[in-house]
Length: 433
Image (cartoon, rainbow, N blue to C red; front, side, top):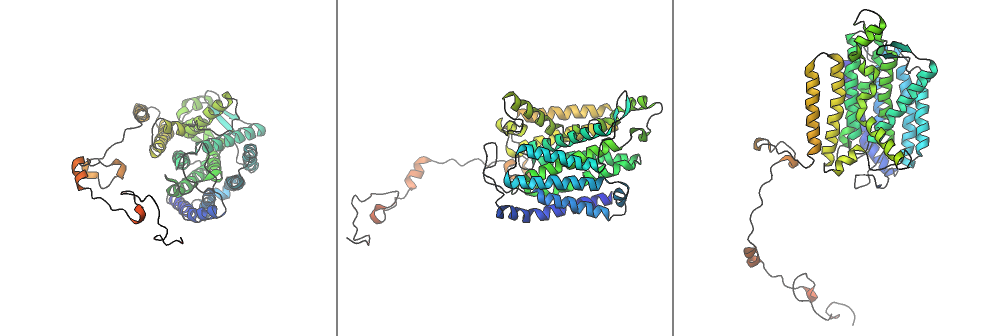
């Protein structure tokens, strides 16, 4: 765990320190697009934050390669190299899009090619554990198509949700934390070496998001752009593919009996394996709703609009920061609720906690204008918007009128109060007659 913490800290530090120079570089190169109709920010903000995030990824992989406990991931598996190759390609396309606004079909093709690069180097889905059936081996074509589809869906889900300051980075960080806990449990709890790459990918992804968030929180000083959103989406998809396609469910050996009985009995344990997209359920739901909405209107599925979930939160009265926190809340509830249920499916307390927290989330959605006030003893600690406002003093209008002192008119009556001269004497003004 210490090696993972060191990798996370180095990745976050490199990303954080490079974001400032990258912001100056984006301003110098003109990577500050004009405000569009669907944007919620009011001032042009530089993009290209994905440059700092990519170098954070490289720093994390470099540090992990030199750590004794993590070096085996690079020796026994080619997945880190496959991830770096696909990430470099999608990052370059994202940088070009942040600067020159590439066509949506070009970006879609680049996403498919990046997924194909990872598949060619071994990062692909080999089999799927299906409840009631067992482990189903996939043909190379089936594994390739499923891998490409998962990568494209995840990248676009993260890209679609990147509409508010700090939203995409925070939600992906929450998803990565849940994935890390599950992958770490498989590796050290069940001694499954195949889960090691996914554990490394998720901890690096957490470091990238944590290092970028201080610069991206509202009001954001820089946006990650497509170079960042597509990059973190690809890494999150690679983590899901590594866990789903490389870990053999029979290696868990939790239950005895046939493979079909074991898989059916261990269904809660396989939930993150079977449904990795539940970790990013909110971005995926936003993606599906956007496609249905735009297709219903006769528009292209890639046409931009203001109908995303975060836009709707703003429309019903939530502030920018509160809308982001609500999205964080639901992402964490779904991700960690799924994780907790996969560990202890027989515990009724987990179900009750999820139901209770869901009720709290619904209340928060229905009270957009409610602003909690901190107690008096915490007034100096909380932000100003949560402090109790002092009552305004009562002003007597008669006393104000009596205390008002008339202001004499200046030269030619050029003041807001007083008489104004009807004709101008140019000689007194210093102009030739």
